[in-house]
Structures are given as C-alpha cells and as structure tokens.
Amino acid sequence: MNLTYDSIAEIYHRLAVPLVFLRPAKDILAVLRIEPDAQILDVGAGAGAAAQAIKSIKGFKGKLVELDISLEMLKASNSSSSVSKVVGQVPGLPFCDNSFDAVISNFVLSHVLKYREAITDMVRVLKPGGKIVITSWDNDKNNYSELWNETAESVIGKVRLSKVVSEFMPSRDIFTNPENTSELLKEAGVKDIEIHKSESTVKTTISDFIEMKSVMLQGRYIKSKLGAERFKEFYRRIVENFNEQFNDPVEYPRFAHIVIGTKP
Ligand SMILES: C[S@@+](CC[C@H](N)C(=O)[O-])C[C@H]1O[C@@H](n2cnc3c(N)ncnc32)[C@H](O)[C@@H]1O
Image 1 (tube, helix red, strand yellow):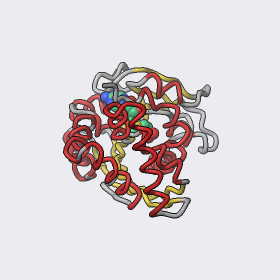
Image 2 (image 1 turned 30 degrees about the vertical axis):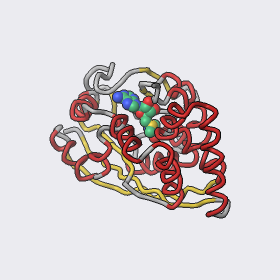
Image 3 (image 1 turned 120 degrees about the horizontal axis):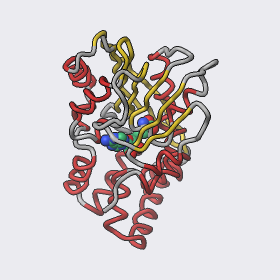
Image 4 (image 1 turned 60 degrees about the vertical axis):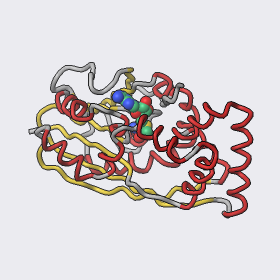
C-alpha cells in the first residue's frame, strides 16, 4: 500500500500549500529573520511552501535547498533560480557538516521514527551560529475535520484508522507538544531555544476541503481499502453530510508550534 506523498503532490501543491501550509511558512521566516544572502536547508520541503514564502522577503539573494524523500513533491514545488531540489531523507542528509545558515523542518518529524538522529543530523549540517527551526501542528480540532473523521471511521473503523496514523506518523504525539521539541533540541546541544505560535485561519469551499482531506493520509488509506468505486460512494456521502450540516464556505483556525534555536 503506497501511502507516501508521491500520489498527492499535485493536490497538495494546488490546495494544501495555499490553504494550510503557506501561512505558517511565512511565520517561520518572520521568526528566523534571515539575512538576504542566507543558505537555507528545508528538510521535508514537500511541495514548496517555504519557497513560496521566501518570495515575499524583499531582496533575498540567498539559496534555499529543498530536500524531500518524495521526488513527486519536489517536482510539484515551483522552481526558481534561488531554489535547488534534492531527493533524500533525514536522518542521512547528503550534506557536509556546517553547510547552512538555517535548517528548517516544517510538519515533517512527526513522520520520522528516528527523530533524535534526525535532529542531530540537522544540527550537524548547520553552521555554528546558525538557526534550526522545527514546526509542528497543535492537536487542534474543528467541526469539519470531526465530521470527516466520523464518516471515515463509520466506514473503516476507528481503531484501524488511528493505527494507520500511528504507523505513518509514529512521532506525531511527541512533536504535538513544543516542550518535547525544545528538550530534544537541548539534548542535541542547541542553545537559546524559543517557542512561538503560528495562528492562521483556513477559509475554503466545502468541495476543496473534502478534496484536500480525501488525499491526506486517512483518505489515501480509505481509498486503498475501498477501491475506486466504493470510495466514490464514500465521497458522495461525505459531501451530503457536509451540505446538510454546514454552510459554504467553511472557516476554521489552525495552530502550529514553531521551535527555534541556535547552534553554538
Ligand atoms: C506534511 S508534509 C510538509 C511539507 C512542507 N514542509 C510544508 O510545510 O508544506 C511532510 C513532508 O515530509 C516528507 N518526509 C517525510 N519523511 C521524511 C524524511 N524522513 N526525510 C525527508 N522528507 C520526509 C514527505 O515526503 C512530505 O513531503
């Protein structure tokens, strides 16, 4: 069963980046206060939310290296002369020690079982005095996700769905709490750690919300289990439930934790 991001790169770039990931990426860059000529590594860059956010920094002449395990996600990211793309994974970053002024990793370490090694590796490639940023979602809930989850659970079972989440995102519970991230950074020798909060509002049509949810992890799993025809039926039921209960468009808040520190 292929639950990786490869098959969803296009929808991720078209919907998830502008609706959900761009705002925190902008907040991360504001917290980082990068120099115009900075060399930045984006670990698990996905479809390029940080690259899009960097475009709004006036006079940026530095370089952003996007690294991701998924070639398709990197292909979906916009190309530009200041961005280079590398297929790879953390831990196991294919870069020399002390290479970057900043290393960022947004919503990625929840997927990584060997998260301690991942953090040590990110600190390794950071120059002394450089900044590391790890961002993760809060465990926030909203009525729309709840209804989507309830409908999904009614088809596939609650236990099975939560098992899939813990298999694909084995470290999610750890990184939901920014104090854990802060402790892990301390253990890796990082100093001057600060925790910031990113708050954003997602406003979208019911149709885009459901499309986006349906390609996220649980949606991909349900599709793989039900097959195309039964998935269409499931999709139709979700649309019906949403239209019965909510007005279009939908609007809800999202909270992310940005943890930043400096390599001594
Ligand atoms: C939720 S997406 C976040 C993408 C991007 N950082 C953003 O903010 O939009 C997680 C990304 O991490 C990548 N990923 C997962 N495990 C990884 C690993 N061990 N090394 C590198 N990338 C990884 C996935 O392929 C996916 O593109």
